[in-house]
Image (cartoon, rainbow, N blue to C red; front, side, top):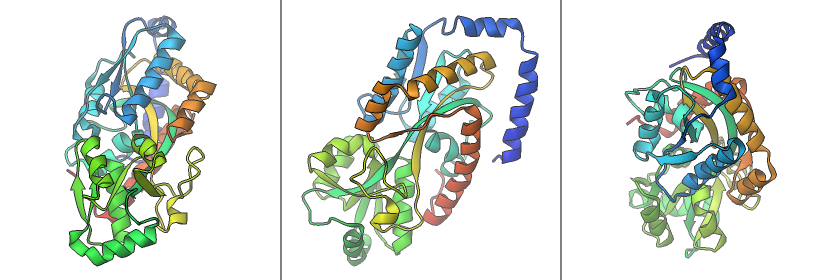
Length: 328
């Protein structure tokens, strides 16, 4: 959909345009935020990922003294929220705190007819943190390793099933199946509650789900984690093996979060947001929050984020090919 050259040219053009930006743009930044800020969440209220959005929104409010409200626009695997931000007024008062790995890098291979451009309809501010989805089974059952699960699923054939709920979840499950030639049937869930209940009770054989959502249930033994979607263990979750160690070769599926605003938001405001969020990213209470929620810090800047988008978009094309993922 776009190339590294497209991004570089776009960045150059933006830089030239901003060199002639009127003084009013910088005046806007000096008193920013000068209104109520809406932090758009692609998740339903109360979900583990929603908690993360609310944490960063609260930190932004503390640093700026502004009123920052979280507005949940859940549905369609995040498509609804992402399109909403793309169409919002570019005044810096609508910000998107979300897993950019899914909603920007993966979007071209996950959705057939995108009504937003993952690069050009947004100003990409900075990265925040990264985590990974986890493959887990019921804590009540005997399965404790990926080889054990694979053996059970191979015997079950199409009578075996697994649960998915979001783009990384789908990719993780499909790539695992493909690696071992499994015929296990995917069951798509819209809500986390029923999914988790069905895994715990053995209705489905396994699930691939955001670690933030199920960390507590893994800790208390209701669920058993067999592998992270990332190749290596996360520093924040050292007890769960990475995919390479667990026995799923060639898988390194990270979920990284970023901040974005609508395209044409004044550069000075974007720069101020980048500075604010990078300060937030390394504060002690942020590091503790991330550790408690199974995430590692990933401070950055807009240039690094654009490079990451290019790299991860190519990665997602490969994930889609390997996992035979069809866009919806």
